[in-house]
Length: 196
Image (cartoon, rainbow, N blue to C red; front, top):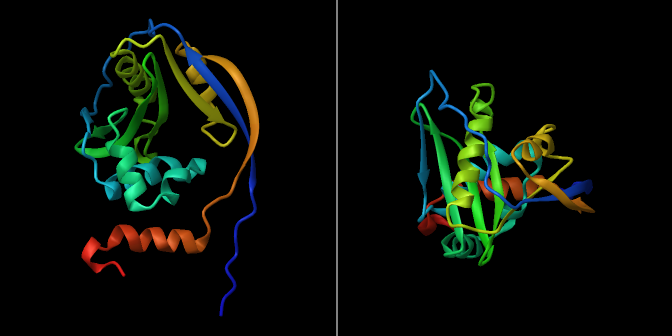
């Protein structure tokens, strides 16, 4: 029988940032691409995992992939949570997720583009739309965290839009094992009645 190999942990340096006023920037809608930004209040877990993997696989996003269906569905349907999907030329191209951490604090918990959407000139524009959405409920602060496994310019981009670092910490991340990846593929490809 094959031995299950757990990947070695990766050291992660995390930076917490927050902004205390809405962004002042204004960016035009990207040209030569058709975009739509749609809220997904009843997003199915399998579609959410698809978005999460398409955006996060390059950056070692694993937390939501380790949740079972019930836990993920409860998280996604929590009234404090909102998921919004970016479509480019008719197909999903990214998403953002906001969490109302406190009455006057919104966390940008997830943000990113699919690889196919990189290089189209929509990244800054999409982040600005995300921040407009975060500030639409009138919070006093918007928070986000990034780390050294994220896009190399993520920290710089957040600061360019008005975020300021408020703390750092070191942690470890355990990548998904081959067994976990196989289980994910099975879980999202089978209908609930087919699962055993």
